[in-house]
Length: 101
Image 1 (tube, rainbow, N blue to C red):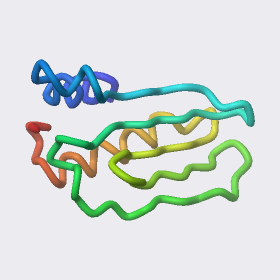
Image 2: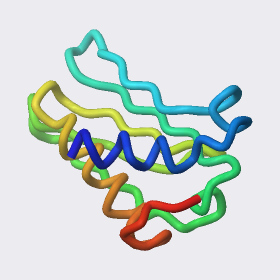
Image 3: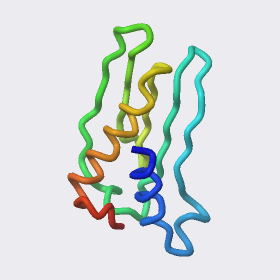
Image 4: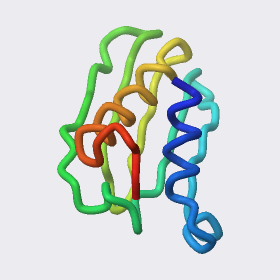
């Protein structure tokens, strides 16, 4: 899974995109994870994304959506893989398995 997000990022890098945009993964204080992925200039920029929201479980909560020109994922401490996997599944749906721009 981490190899796939690395591959998606590398496929976006064109000498310009990576200077202004990128992927950010950080921790939250409640606790949990924050994933922010710039979509500007990618095949996903105008693609439809269905929000994922399951906020009930204390540790296994997840919320992923596209807001503006960014994929925004927030989740509990054990759900980072689920957030990144949901992004990659969507990216593959839109762009195909090659994860191209």
